[in-house]
Length: 552
Image (tube, rainbow, N blue to C red):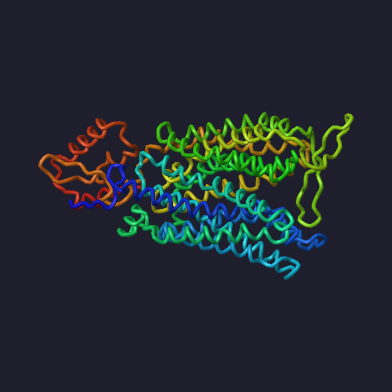
């Protein structure tokens, strides 16, 4: 049987390291820009609100609320379904080229969008439309980048290589904070609030152009290219993803046993921490941005550390361990953050914004034993301690988030991989995680406690860990390269006979993990060769029809 080197055998990539490095750089560069574009909106929400939602106009309340808090997150699963279908039918590269174009165009459009004073009610309507486009594009971007990288790299190092994609979300947030701080420093607060807020949106055009140029030079992933050449791609990926009971079960388990908990840990350690510093502890916004930015920068290498570690000890124990550690640590960490702020905040009262419907918290402190509203900002916060406490939270993020891309890729078959992994990821992050600030704030407002909002991420993280511990499979031994055609599976040589396609053997069909050693690999090959000894059929005859390739 003739075999080509189109794709690698035995779970070992033939793609050289230089190519892998280019693939990671191209995928990560574009994904960083998409996260930057998505987060810059949230980072500038306080500045944008008076520009697009004028006070006293109650008819805009619902529009403002949805635009600010919900739309960009809620639509992400729809983007995952739409672009996942394209990625599984047409190609990984094509799908995330389209998402990059949409996100880049939408973000630049915000920088050029006239305000309410200029075009009236059309301004917030256009803004919410742009926010929808951003959410849809982000819903398709992450899955494409993760799958694209995973389908280029060796099976035994997938956690390490895909962890570079995991850095992009945190680095995108860091980049958005950095650009805002730089623009404010150069222009000054007054100019920034007047028109300078447009600069971070327009600056993304340069980053977008660079990323687009890099991605246009990329080729399709070798695994998808092989499937497409052999006519094995799905024509209805969304339908096929839900067709089989096993694939449906994997998506549900991935959501409730992995991504829901990962989502709340990610958003608590970064977004909620920033919100808590600015809104509850009344840390001056610029200082709060610096605290979170420094903590993120210090923690970035740990994504790769935990991704590589998952190749050695497994994805499951790291992800679930991170969730449990986060859940039991949040309350003491946030108590320490309150002490580090040094302004004696003990509670909150709530007030509803007449324009947006947003619930705002008014921190209170004790004055002569009486709770009194705290105005102004913390006069002398311990910045070093605050950086350390946020850094610890980001360590938990790295533990959970570093290995999850590798797990999601390994959990689903290649034909519907883009769709199947994107849906649980974006429901977990867009719904469970993305709405965390709203839910946490509402709980604080209802109870008057500055710590009550932490109950939501603690409960979700613990429940996810329980479900994951019982149902989540360990996938680090899965060999995704064996899913492709005859050129991508191990070959065993029989004594005096032709090479045997291991897909034609029932023993090979049960083999779903990497051999633990070279001796085990050799023993497996001899066992398979003996099982074919004396067989009158060759791999190129009817045996292939009798024993179709396994569906992983």
